[in-house]
Image 1 (cartoon, rainbow, N blue to C red):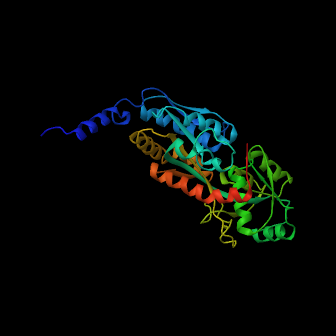
Image 2 (cartoon, rainbow, N blue to C red):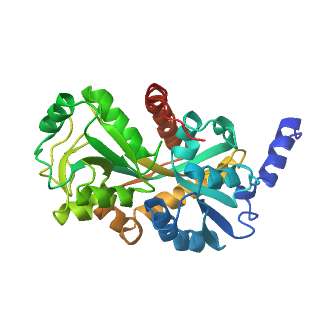
Image 3 (cartoon, helix red, strand yellow):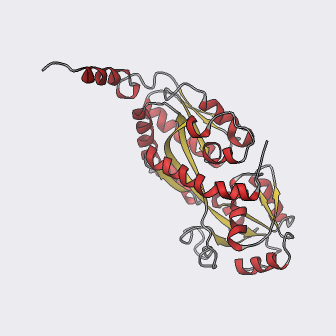
Length: 320
């Protein structure tokens, strides 16, 4: 049977695709985390690196490139060769949301990245300081409506997921609450414990220790069901508020990275997340383990854009 031109091209493509042969990876793989060391995604990337090293036969190293809401590290990956040797582990800020917040972006969010896999998502929890009188969300909302703009809510900074959660909460409840930005969630929690601010809507893993230690009071979870770690805390829906929101973290590559490489990384990460030694500790702290394939994560990114763009524009959230 004669070899057709299409078959010849298909064979050439097969040979040229590193993931289908032995060419990938041909050198160490770098996972860029666009935030400082010690955060959730940094911790998970470093937990995954040894397993990926074992599976891929090349060192997998984690590199922190923080700044500009994650844009600095994301830009490094966006401009890297699309050969599967440079990946980005991040929240959805740089790959979905920052385009609506920053006046200028160093890369085109719509075309810069190829989604790989969802790593984890973290539910949000509304908490107040123990000095505050409110025992449930209804009491807090009533206080906010009685004195618009006087209650204060801390965040990890303008445009961060904590800030966006506050704006969503305000829209859902028809309240006006003063936003107090900090340089990171830890500083906001410190002031919440100390009584300098009234509330935060934070990721469960960030604040679970203070809750169990009695330093802050949880009022409601922005989840569809009650949290296993805090079954006594009602959901927002149980409190009469239509508000479900969490933070997703995932892995992306430069656009143009061959699909077989993306698929292989996604399958390997999904397998690793199921190992209690890797995902178990974060799951105990309240993180919801991800997994799946590139199409699954692409859908998560699109949902985030659709949800948050109108909120950001209505609230006038901008950063330089």
